[in-house]
Length: 450
Image (cartoon, rainbow, N blue to C red):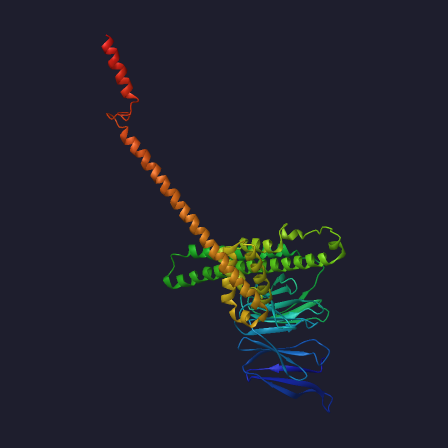
């Protein structure tokens, strides 16, 4: 509300201050309250609610967690876990629906302020993210990073909109205008840049293709430099080897995240289709027997079959990484689709592989979520039954192939005996009254007549 500010530091304290006008007419700060934390405070941010009872304070600490408190009572509300390194920047949307955090682990996490769930993890920056600012009256936000870039994101569609380059050193801070017409950025290059909004249309697909081309060019260029400098000293060889390996890792990470986003989008599409199907059945049109037009994005498949098709499009080596970046809410929905597919005995091997990895990786979250108890029991029962059926079927097929091979070998050996008996000088018709015996008898009768 503009009546004060909040600060945090390495002394584990979050201090609240209020503006007050001194006797001389100059503004001053008065310390009013203190909140004790268990670790160093890295970042602090108020929410934008005008209601004092609903206003929140988000505190990022050195233990890589973000804790949410009520501003009026300083009571604990939520604890957000997920960053591997401390979150250096946090900000709330002005409707207090979303909180975005970014930090030294180069990732951006979007959280819901109602339950503290992770909506999505975004990747793009190649170095620590130093600042993050939402645009007023939207769910779009800017991020600044030590990789010398500023990126513009959409928190509803979970995708990058723009990449802004211009700084020649680390970008440290951002400031948004109230109307969102421009953003200021400052960096280690001693420059403050003003970025204004224009009326130019941005094509997201073109932006994505342009960024991927730059990434691939960077990887190819680093490999070329490695090949040219192979005759240099041994001390420089290690540095040359490190660069392409790092780029390759970044490239693999980008591909894995893209696959994870594809799986998450498929889950959202399938859920939306199921919701629309149920709504249509309950409506008057569904009761009258009218046919509903399915979503063309599902390629004419049912939601569970579309989910299986998307999982099959992910390369086997990238499946685990793509499942690793899924939010907790999407994991619960994916378990539901795996149960449906196993009921129909479709894609048993892929479903079992995905289910086992999800349970091993997200064991703590799954155990804490009691709504998954019944689906997990059914999943365990179905997996055991389907895998036993597959094992028995494979065993029958192997036994059948062995029997076919044995019969084939017996037939070959039978033909080989006939071939040996038909060798030169051996009469195979001897003693049977056929063939050469009959011919010999006719020949002897002719001789007698003569």
